Amino acid sequence: MFVLAFIPIPFLYYLLNIFSTCALLGIFLGIALRADAKLGFHLFISSIPHSIVEIFAYCLFAAVLSEMNQTIRIGIKNLFKKNKKEMVQMDGFVNVIRVYVILAIPFIVAAAFLETYFADVVFNFLQY
Image (cartoon, rainbow, N blue to C red; front, side, top):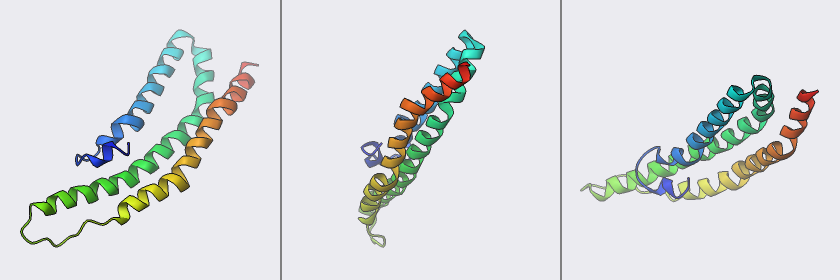
C-alpha cells in the first residue's frame, strides 16, 4: 500500500490490501456456506473478530496514505504552475510512518492473534 501511494493516482493503494482482503473473505465464506451451511456459518462467526480488526487496520493506514497521496499530487500540480502558492509538506510522510508504527501495526498483530488463536477457540466452541 505504501509503494502504491507514491503513484499520483488517488485510491490506487486501496486495491492491494483492503479490496483483496474483503473479496477473498467473501469468496471463502461463500464457498464454505455453499458446501455446508452449518460449518460455513460456524466459520463465518469465528472469522468476524479477525476480519473486523484487520480491515480496520488497513482502513486506518489507507486514510493516512490518502493524505500522503494528496500531498504528492499537490506537489506534482505545483510543478506545472507559474505561481507556486502551496509547498509540499514533508509532515505527511512522517505522519504515515507514525500512524503505521503506533496504530496500524498493533492492530495487525492483534488481528493475527485473533486469526490464529481466538478463531479456533470460537470455532471449536460452536462445534459443540
